[in-house]
Image (cartoon, rainbow, N blue to C red):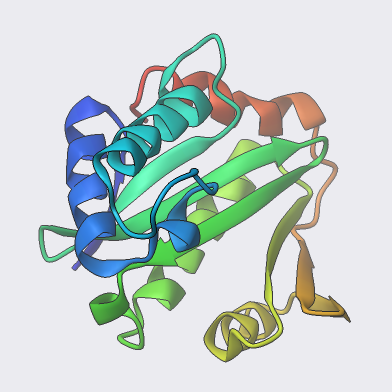
Length: 177
């Protein structure tokens, strides 16, 4: 069973464990100077990154959830408002990929985006990420490739108010739904 658990400090600790066990740091956070791998500095930077982007009400720009598969953290999902759109992002630990989890999470994010009043659902990936490209195309999104970047856009219909889409972030600071 796939569940999106709103990010809070306890969930963030579980998310970091999943990232360290199953992802390269560059897949899940901005670059940090130093040797490669999950150094102590990089582990702390991971926490700081998510606290700023999702948990601190003064700086939150997105709503983030831990993706739980049968009670185990296997990745993260996010929605970030941009005007009348929400930008979606998903990362999964290596051993969670190819199991249909991304498809289920995308459906949950689409439902959340529609509920927020967003008019558009956007995402980006790389040209060599065939799984993400197929998943986004399957939703009905239009894909545009420029170099190695692939941008996806799905119109959600209706006259959405940008302010309603921005309401996603207000809930992020509390870490709950």
